[in-house]
Image (cartoon, rainbow, N blue to C red; front, side):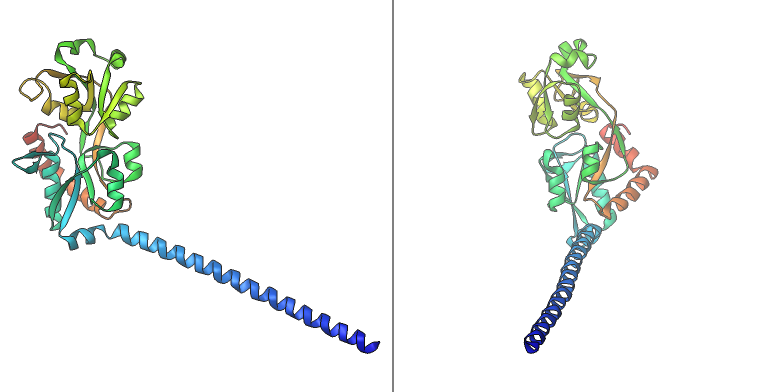
Length: 281
């Protein structure tokens, strides 16, 4: 009997030891898993940081700055197969300051943030309004030009549409994903989304839509007497806004561009371009 009791006690002690060993083994495994996860997270964060802060190095190694634009006179438009305009020249000068060439790529304006994030372009420089949506999706420069969204209609009815309330009976064409679309939505206007602001003007000229909402700087260059749309006129300004350049979030190119824009303001470059392309600061 004593032998049986002794044997049972021995078995219980062995079980206790094994249980204790099991608990001790579980804890390092959990700690190791947590450490592995933390290391992976840290590596990911480091990789993301490197991807953003290395934009300047990336551009200089590639030898070119890829600029996302749309056809938007007087900011970016083509003459003799070359991109010209206020922003086109300014972007070219910025690329020169980095010691690289500039390459302009037409983009779908509604997908500008995705193009930037995906790396197919290095920046968006196209009379871009600094809206909350834009500034939350990109690393944006300080403003370099003032602007507004204006209503464009046929000049023979322009006097009927002197304020936003009177425009609510009109059907609008607006560039998809633009500040013009935001104003159409904010004012409760009926609208159709189109590819770009140039297309919006064509919709009005052809009679497909009653009106368009476009940038004031574009309206000054393209609407009214002496322009390609002499039969159109711009009326009410729906807001006041500012233009900026957009880079990837966290990009080190933003600070470089801010320094360039500041210098361009003080050395007369911006003044020269505003006079050349008839835009307002």
